Image (cartoon, rainbow, N blue to C red; front, side):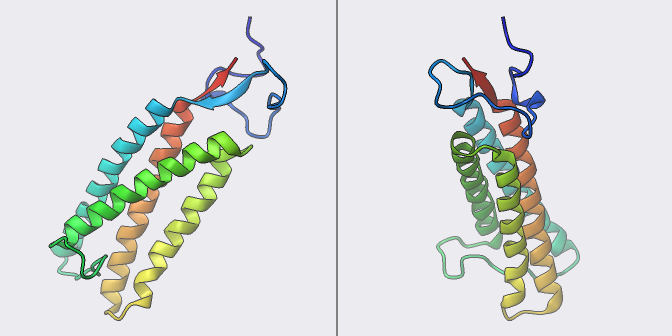
Length: 166
């Protein structure tokens, strides 16, 4: 028989509510289904890469230049550079979420703050480079769109990947 105080999945989890003690042998505790989390992280990487490419295409439609990430890299096009950077960001965020779930009492709160601040940094960095204002704004908007995509998708994947372990 299950205790109604502890739901079976993360969807009903109340972060402010009681948690089972971690140091009591045989006690219930939250765990992550790593396969599901990382499969969702891989899907998030694909979506984030596509969001960056769509952002670049929208900028091109409006004839606005964007800043190139990784100047001097081996990638030839800004689209490939942005796609790789966005996908890498999604995988890093998935790893961060996995680590937070296993080590912190309120992983969603910490994850939200970390992604919010990283997105703010990504939005401000274009304004530190020498470019026109419209180029800086367009690049910042693409970075914000990718940050929102990664933050929301990894959070929702984690919500479906966290379970009560007996």
